Image 1 (tube, one colour):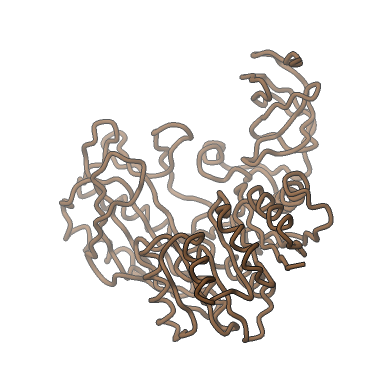
Image 2 (cartoon, helix red, strand yellow):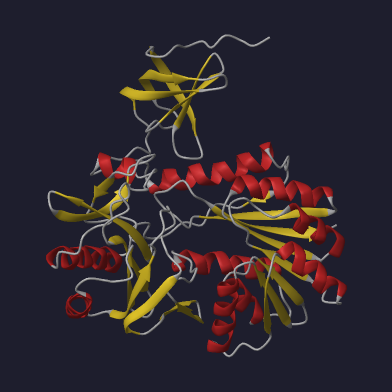
Length: 456
């Protein structure tokens, strides 16, 4: 028998927030019924208005705070906080780290049923602002001028902004200057509803270690009006620019980049380093957006792999070879597999760029390629996985269990799917020894973690 919902829409009630959801909303409970309320923090007492109820949970709006959390901080712009991707900006950095570390512990216990795993204190940043090295900013028009910023959630309305507090200053500057130049030259913004206009997005990438900047102009049309003047002005006003690229996306789609890319000026790639490893980054390359914390993450993965120089290592979901090339410095041989062919070409190029000859890369699905390697005699002593947010494919997990590598190192961007996959590996004969959370994305709800797993 279903229990009746203890609140109704438009009720005003007093609550105490107990927790945060995965997207940073406060969680309050009324007779066990959870209400999710944006901007509420654990421990705070507040008045809320119930705005929606469902079978298992409801939503509320914060009306008044009676008692504030010691971790609450004032924010400069409520609009940017609501729409600009900084969901945890109203929490002190100490509070953010505590929340993320607790999130990892909770899902390992609740989803993974892993009670005795060592979870280390989270590794945060010394300077948790202005860290992102890439932006893809939608462009629109308002009062006859170009605007660029971010979309309001669940809408196509662009909020114009001059600065993001999580983008590097060089990225913020590049986007604003390109927007100004395009506006001065009368280049029309793309209109989603009519599928007319020209300029869809401005993209900027920056090599933090090299100081090299790439600007990508993404348009609906193959023709870029005022192209020569646009390039001339970008080069004049952005001295760090090394590459200006034109990408054409003529489709009605939410996908940002199209299939046609042409270099308008400078080089096809810019370069950056993670540790001592150099990477070539094109307009289409996947590259970690926070290389400072990526180095922390990969060094921990390397520590957990504990390589002596004799091991064969398989890197599933290898991308452009970022982890593979770190591992290759300590392993006998590294085999990397990735489903995106362009990423594999980048991985091969990056291996050559660094003079690394003991890394081999193949394009394909990990759950198909790795069993093939296994049959050919290329069994791994150590297997590293760095899957997308949905976690590892079940077929890959079964292959790992059959192959029985001595160690598995799991790099995760989603603690919930990490916990789920660790449970499967544990049931297949492995033991999760320790987990290290790493804060790759301060001011947001995202948390990465590295798990050390050994064959029992």
